[in-house]
Every structure is written in structure tokens, then in C-alpha cells.
Image 1 (tube, rainbow, N blue to C red):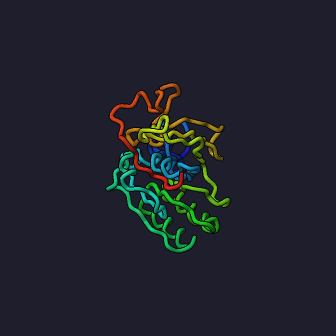
Image 2 (tube, rainbow, N blue to C red):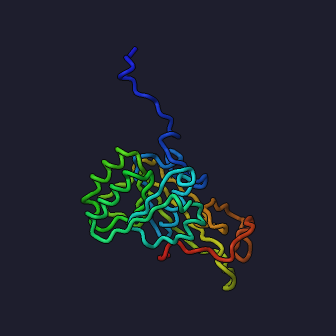
Image 3 (cartoon, rainbow, N blue to C red):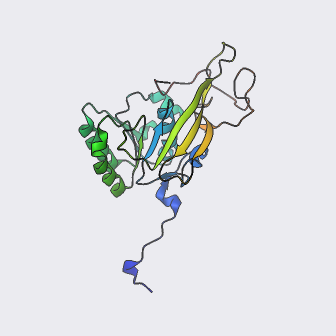
Length: 234
């Protein structure tokens, strides 16, 4: 038998991951946010997807740093289930060098870092990646990432559509989106139809055939008349 000093403890996958909403678990290879990994979010609803991706982890006690993503709406973040008292926003006014410094500093103190990489960020990715691995944090870049930023998992929103206006009248009650998951850590591509957000402001699976003639989800109760737009574009 090997001496205790050289035995490597076996850590269950669930302990190496931060939790995500059940609606998103099948889109990730470990069913959660793997520590030390980069999970990119792209497409017209990228910011909403990224916030929804972090909500369960923050609710469970993790701290979230939002670095250089000024378009996030605070009320919409709270409505998606993210406790605002565990969120810190960090502005980035300089170039990619300053971005890398602030992201690296955030990784030192936060388990989840949501950010929008600026042009030229690829020159600093290795430094950020080393810090990410050492600290066991999760990096969630949003928007069109530069070619040099390699994501372990890439989630893309397509077929995005606001729902609720029916035949030209009514109020927006939710946004549907198809989310595609791929990347070097995914054994095969996976897709899911989601509410992003749904009538209650939260992320949820959208099952086919449950929308009434006015385009409103027939399963929903207590729906808000409107939802706060999280992504300025799209």
C-alpha cells in the first residue's frame, strides 16, 4: 500500500462544482459550474444567461464579482434570484491590461467572476487562467470573446423571442431562447429551450405546446405585467 503522504484524496464532482439552476444543469458537463473553469455566454441574451447561470451559486453562499459589465440592470438581477448583498460591481476604465488586473484581483476574493473581456484581452488570458486554477474560482465571460480566450464550456443563445404581445397588443411577459452548449469540455453539443427570463423573472425550462393563443405561457401564475430588460442589445 502507498504511504498516506502520496495518496491523492478523491473529491466528489459535486464538491468541485458550484450549483446551477436545474434548467441549466444538463447544459454543463458536470451539472454545475466546475471550479477553475471558464464558462462563456454568447448571443443576444448573453447577459441574462450569465446572470441566471450564477444565481444558484450566489444564493447558496458564493460571492459574485461583476467586472466591466455596466449594462446589467440591478433590479433585473435581483428578480432572477441573485442576492444583491453578495454581488460587487467593479468598473474597468482602462484597456485590457487593467481589465486583467481587476479580474485577477476579483478571483482572489470571489468564487464567481462575471465579466466582458475587452478587445486585446487574449494577451493577458494566461495570467488570469493561472489565478483561476489556483483559487478554484469560476470565470463567466459574456459577449463575443476574443479568439485567444478559450472556454471550457460555451453557451450560446439563439432563436431569442419576447413573448406576450400576441397579435400586436398586451405586455411582454417573458423571453424564450434556445441555448446551445459546446466547447472543449463538452463530450457532445446539447440544446435546451428556456425562459430567459420567464414571467416570474426567473430562468426556467420552456416545454413545447403550453403557450396559449396570445403567446402567454399557460402554466404561469402570478405573472408580472412586464419584465425588466437585462440585456440592452436584443
